[in-house]
Length: 284
Image 1 (tube, rainbow, N blue to C red):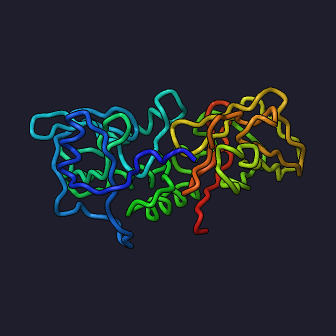
Image 2: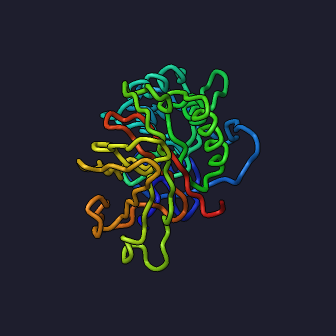
């Protein structure tokens, strides 16, 4: 399985991470432990002045006269060309104050600082607020706040908030579809058994479902599979979607799609409406 983005193997100080990002270095790190409470900024949080919002899960801040791009940790908002990208970015703009507190946990492969953000004025937890309002997915990570973010996402989905709304993207489906991460972690080296790594789309309704143009994706910003013409699941039927090439509707990927450490699968309508979602956690 490919490495999880925004995660790493060793810890260094937050200020050092920011210095590394400014220097163009991308040494990853992790920090923290589970906590049952919605978080407050840690004592060693770094203060920055907000200069701009890049998209729904990233912003730029000025720290001691230098601009740093911050990728919000533990979440993933829609990409700029995807449904609900604009509302997510707008919500982030409205959440932010003139200055914020930053708890930087790593740098990513693009040299961005990855971390958690609080609004200076009232300590509002920005990462959590975006997820709770339905403007971002919670990532299946082992970060200190992962369980709380996943809980916030589940509540937003129950309320059909934000990107979880059935009319978020102007589409209207009467299908009763469900996803099952049947075998996201097959026995053996993942990249050698790609046709044994698969998810299943179930049609629990009483009419056939033509899924031409629908998109199957993971929780990252990378893996997307647009289903080809003729992808029809009969009423009460199911369709297995493998990561390998043996099936013409499979990903035909050269690398594993689903992360062994945990992942989400989403089925989207052609315009981006979320019609089915499931999450895999090895501990479940």
